[in-house]
Amino acid sequence: MQAQGEGRREANLALLLRTLRARGPLSRTQLAAGSGLSKATVSPLLANLEHRGLTQRAGTTTTQGRPGQLVQLRPGAVCGIGLDVHPGHLGATVTDLTGEVHLRRRTSCDTSAPEHALDRLADLTRKALTDVPDADWAGVTVAIPGRADRATGTATAHRLRWREVAVVDGLAARTGLPIGRLDVDTEANLAAYAEHDRDPVDHLVYLNGDHTVAAGVIANGELVRGADNHAGEVGHLVLDPLGGAHCACGRRGCWETQVGLDAFLHACAPRHDEVHNPELAPGERMSILRARAERGDARTLDALARTAAALASGIAVLTTLLNPRKVVLGGYFAALQDWLVAPQRQGRTRITASTLGFAAGGTGAALAALRRVLDDPTVVPVKDNTPRTGGSHEGASA
Ligand SMILES: [Zn+2]
Image (tube, rainbow, N blue to C red; front, top):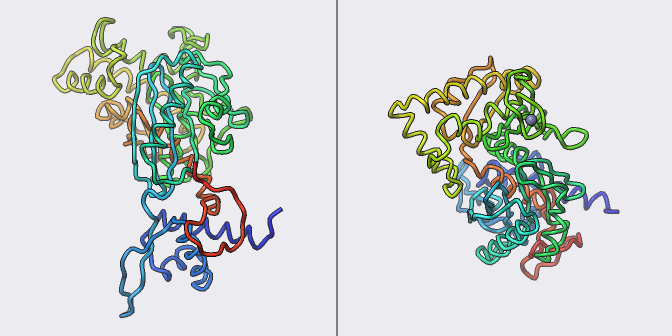
């Protein structure tokens, strides 16, 4: 068990790191004021962060005639890897503590074969580790368009035809990375985490606009996961049980059959049309549809109007149930926001388009991978010969 003093020191280091992340660059005085710690407490803690290579000096500021040294997070010091899985392709995102994206990659893959997909995810991880060579690595998080069990590291996704796939064990075996650095979560939860990181609204719902429609729900600043980690599967709210289309889950009239990307694309264009081409990135397909809408194509505009109306019905259910301050619409909803987001009105709830694109889950996954360091900065090893002031954690280098 840790000594109480040491636990408090780690908590204070984490507090300074988070304060710098939210508000830096800051002087010692500003950091003390921003964190609620005394200046005398802040000084040795800052030295500790600097020895780990997490912070650096950033010029001076002048307050009341006295110059003060500014401190900021060191860009690229620690990185997290986010991997995202979609039907037909995989993505990788590398982000540092400042939120800067160092790498984004997308690759085609037959994701219906889980072992093959895990091979390719391991390839993406190894490439990320070599392409950003100077960073310490916090960890890797995989975003799943379906269900994820963080306790067992497994994932189930109808769209991928994955059932209880051992994602964490499979990646650990292929990459040699310790299991403690690997994690799995749902795409919607991770995207909500990324949105909350940008704008820390205490009550927020992120809605995924893709083949799978799911919500990441944040209440009182925390993700709502539910008893079995299935919270947020809102694509299977049955909104039209009698006349609705059949859903992959076996029921009729699920919301996903009305506002999912498949339903939308089929409403927009016949089967042979280029918008159905899986070789085209989702963003490219949306550009084609945006151009058609802008020149007044009747079929596209009709599909957009019907999708916007169906979207409003479901969002009304979510806002009634959860009373969020903000609903963020992602994926294709955001790509076609003039028609799908702008018309939405739900009382006092702000409804906005995500700026994170179709890789929102991967961005959130990379940020989530950094939590290990944000929770306890001492997992990052000291970089010079300065004597350590306690703690004996493993280093964060891969
Ligand atoms: Zn369903």
